[in-house]
Amino acid sequence: MTSVTSLTASVNQRLADALSAAMPDAASADPLLRRSDRADFQANGILALAKKAKANPREVAERVVGGIDNGAVIKDVEVSGPGFLNITVTDRAITENLAARLADTEQRLGVPHNPGAGTTVVDYAQPNVAKEMHVGHLRSAVIGDSVAQILRFTGETVVARHHIGDWGTQFGMLIQYLIEHPHELDHKEADSAAASGEEAMSNLNRLYKAARVAFDSDEEFKGRARRRVVALQAGDTETLARWQKFVDESKVYFYSVFDKLDMVIEDADVVGESGYNDMLDETCRLLEESGVAVISEGALCVFFDDVKGPDGNPVPLIVRKSDGGYGYAATDLSAIRNRVFDLKASTLLYVVDARQSLHFKMVFETARRAGWLNDDVTASQLAFGTVLGKDGKPFKTREGETVRLVDLLDEAIDRASAVVREKSQDSPEPLTEEEIAERGAQVGIGAVKYADLSTSANRDYKFDLDQMVSLNGDTSVYLQYAYARIKSILRRAGDATLAAHPELELAPAERALGLHLDGFAETLAEAAADHAPHKLTAYLYQLASYYTAFYDKCPVLKAETPAQVENRLFLCEITARTLHQGMALLGIRTPERL
Image (tube, rainbow, N blue to C red; front, side, top):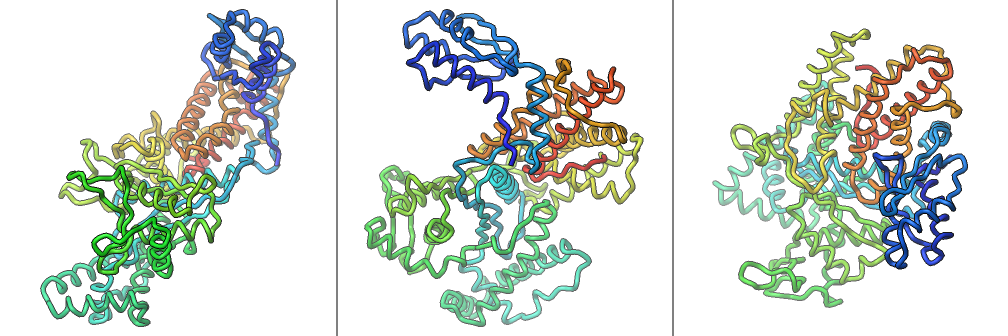
């Protein structure tokens, strides 16, 4: 792979070398280099170093400037204020750096792999069997999918895990009712996977309601249902076959929703609560024998000094209930054992609602006490906030019910299709109705994903479709139209050559665009390390904004010289590739025509 050293890294190394020469005691000091509005970069580290050495910071700064190897990278260094350094790089360095990124034979834009990459299990997109997905399932799926893609791109081995809710006492009720009403889940061949999935879930919803009525009103049925739970847990062949039918019907629905979300969910990655059943006994035995868990009032519990109830008494993590049944903790702890010892993961990441933070805090601490997690194997929760309505309250229907995810996505696609249709009417390259439908889905789903991902995961955000599909502001639509505009220019260029010309002087808008493009790899590294897709969305929005300024101020096809035309086409191409790659890591399509 062709790895490209960023301009930031090149400048930082030259500053560090000069700083070491000027202050030998500060050989490993950080120059604290940052992008700046006053110049290309500003170094702020000299003040603290000079203060520590009881030296005059401005004099130290002057010595550092005198020792900097300018070469072909640094054009000018100015001492500012009490000892800041304002650094300007050469136009040649910007162009040559971008040319090297575009020439990357693996088409990674020169982004290096993380040398410390390991194996991360990302637990996300966790719907429940026999239940419809609602707006609360959106964030886990969207955030988890993007984090997984970013980590993979930076070199991490990622194992996806979708911990679906497929076990529990309610299945005894459902299975018994299905045995007594064997045709409840029959459904016709549908015209599409989505239609088939929604019909499957409709049947399951109908079955659940009917089973619940029978359970609440018929004592004999209730008794049969409870005996069926015992049979399920004991591994009865017929009962397990019926249970598997629920799981299979639900998966048809899950996959139709994920398909609408433009997400690929592999069947092998769907390992629900039931997948760890065979480990539960051993997990409890290991915890009890090690003294991590103790019997309290008949239940196997783990206690924590800092977890207490309103009455001041300790609130334990219950691994096994007093009746011998297992809670979520037993399953989650067994999953940790599987992921650490079988999958050989070095990092476990759980993309789960913030309201479950206490549960995971106790589960992780229990696993650490047991020795399953340590300094080399870590687990953390990527906790996310709530999706709110425009009124700032949890998103509900007018009837006060939770919003179905498919309804929300369909409305987003409808709104986006209207925007695409209206914009297409004024375009020199109008779209066909089939293209409008396809682009409408890409724009609508992209709008929903981007609104979610552009907010820091731990914050709540308001679901406002009008804003999401706006052509203006920080939206995916704005980025998608920027990409489509670039591709239109490249199409109109025809056979014209695009080529980097390092000898050319760059206009201010070209410099600003080029310097921002240079920061793509560092942004990705930061987003991967922090599990923070919102840092990538912020970068891409700024990139689209810089390109818009470039487009307004720097004619491309009508530039003054042939060399300038080629160089600006080159800038268009690398901008398009960066937008395309960045949006792909967010799980968002970039149509070439809109």
